[in-house]
Length: 496
Image (cartoon, rainbow, N blue to C red; front, side, top):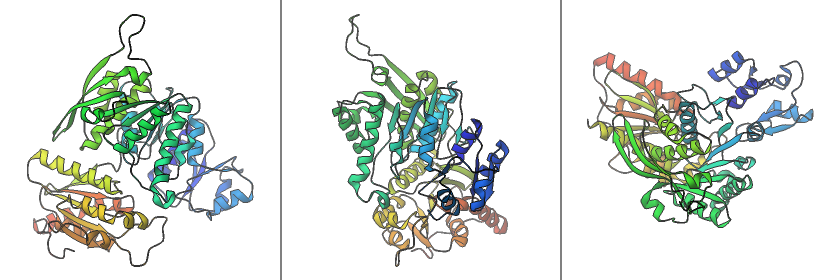
């Protein structure tokens, strides 16, 4: 919401709004000229001296009995969703939309960073804050508009993309969709909207559900290209391979990626011989570095590379620009190092596949450093429905860590479910992992710090309030170092 507000202010609109608490985004909006109240009240509708022409809300986050929404409806002021506004402000631009169950924010951020480093100035709206740009949205001077396409409430069907990326598809948000089939269908409907705009659909060939989406789109006559390894591409020969991953070399500094690009299918050009008798089989080999660890981030970088080129960027410049990507808030975000060399990171991972990818990346990082460090996770489950649905999968994913502290479930918009706690995860975890169920949020930093040993990597994970703990864990580690010069225990006492 704050990102779209920034863009509207930059475009000269009168913007007012409210939030529950003061924050940096609120202060930034005020500095730009927006009027933002703290606390929700019907009177906030008149902050500008007159009633607004429209009220924008996130239906997933704001209850319908919110006093400002109630007042708007009583006074016949149109109430629209965030996605409706985003669709409107993208009109007239080359719309680049990035969708998928996982990786939307990282891939969108990579695309923006690469285009900016390549000398382009795209408008963008991202679900997280770019470290490089220091913001989550921008009103650019270029023709491209890059944004996330969120499927959680089917709002991605509001957009008409010229370029669309689907990173992966895995059942999620079943509190809204109810069935796996309904969740998969929303991506097929999204792909059809790409075709309606004569655009190109870019799919990951290393994800079977996404590749099959591409197959169905091709069968409907839509233009589709893929990215991934040669082995993955061989399984889906009908999908033109636009970016082939040739190698990835992991080191402590990051992952060096080598890939081969075929631009004809991406641009909608035939690779068959034309009047000149020569086929358009142009290929370009590129090498760049991805600073954020993990194979999933390598795949995201390929998606961003193709999206950036399709948006008008020069291939070599976009590839080089990927090396300028410094990450995004809450995506393997480095938060600090203790006196004992214990590094603390924070990540938004809240689905088993995301937890698996992040902990796998953490393991890859410490292994590349070769100093025998352990991985310690502090995880806060998000939503009762998701925890119940994926308890077994969460347990398996978290077992990739050496030690795990699991907090109580962050219910967000859901009410507690009687008899359900995070123990349904911890009780299923592997016996060789030190596991602590920590129901007291206030003591969690002490619990995590007590498990850590010099050189370890600690990562807080979840979509809720767990992000607040990273700095508190660092402070607790500092306190331990000052008190007796020692850090950590063996991590087994009190486990489970």
